[in-house]
Amino acid sequence: MRIDMLGKNRARERVDEWLSAYIDGALSPREQARLEARLAQDAALRARLESLQRTVALVRGMPSVPAPRNFLLTPAMVRQTAPVARRLAPALTFATAISGLLCVILLVGNLIAAGPSRLGAAAPAPMAAYEETPQMLETGPTEAKKAPPASETALPEEGLLSRAATATEHPLRRCGPGARGRRLR
Amino acid sequence: MSAGRNLDEGRLVAAAQRGDLDAFNELVLAYQDRVYNLAYRILGDPAAAEDATQEAFIAAYRHLSTFRGGSFLSWLMRTVANRCYDELRRHKRRPAVSWESFGEMDEEANPFLVNGHPTPEEAAQQAELARFLQAAIVALPPDQRIVLVLSDVEGMNYQEIADTVGIPVGTVKSRLARARARLRDLLQAQRELLPRAYRLEDED
Image (cartoon, rainbow over all chains, first blue to last red; front, side, top):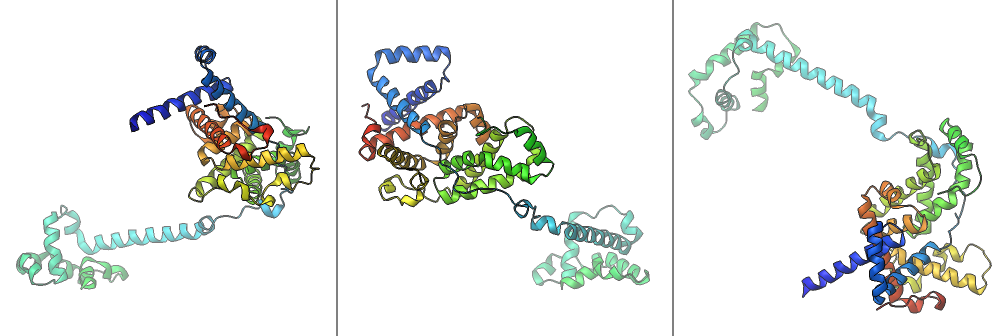
């Protein structure tokens, strides 16, 4: 029943679409001929077309509403006011450049602190990195159980510390791997 | 879409593009009635239509460099239509003036009734009809309303409407058909409110 209603509504919409396009002269010659043949036989369809034509004629015949005032522009109205983001752009660009530079310095500092052996070595296996973290963080007993024996991880840490001690004092040394461990505590 | 009065549109546009605000204001004076009428028909509210008109002229002046020739009025009408369309979409959840409230509508909300023209019986009837039609247009869903106004008030063809609203021509056709059919149904349902000379008979 509902499907019937929907189908009927859809069919009515299609007819209205045809009639509307017919009023605008927007049907193809073939479509127009078919519609006119149906109109000649179907009084209800003719009445539907006439009511639609009258509706369109009423809208088209509406008088124009005059502007209630003048809309002249003044120089102040057309002055471009830059949006906040655009006004802040130079400052934001500068801040981006500075933070980029700091990142580079930090990275270089890290690499220097790691020393040539670390630089030359292959990237540590993810598991090795995972094993290093619990010790640095000195986490609770559960993690400590998972951590390898101190003797296994002490070597790289010792190497780092000894190299750090001999390295030239660098303001960013505190950002090295050892410092990171301390800061996280 | 032709100019409302005789003016050297090309020269004025070229001067405005060079920053001559006076030249642009000549175009404003020539076209403000058309622009306001379109905004009012779409938005159905005089204050909102004023805002949209003013904003459209400001936007048009600022983006004059993007005007690549052709009809300046068409370009201007697209600018205001787009602005109104954005406005309708922004306030999609806000109920439009209800068709049912037509009988209680504040007369001051209708520019036809306050424009100072003499009011013999025929003019009064036409004003009432226009008021009635405007209430019916505003009762249409925004997507259908803008297509109907661009077609039957502004006289744009399907392709121009498609370009203005940014939808396919097929969608313009179906939305326009639905808008007209819905408007017809509204007018038939409320025909006792229409002046006798304009009543639509039910075809069923």
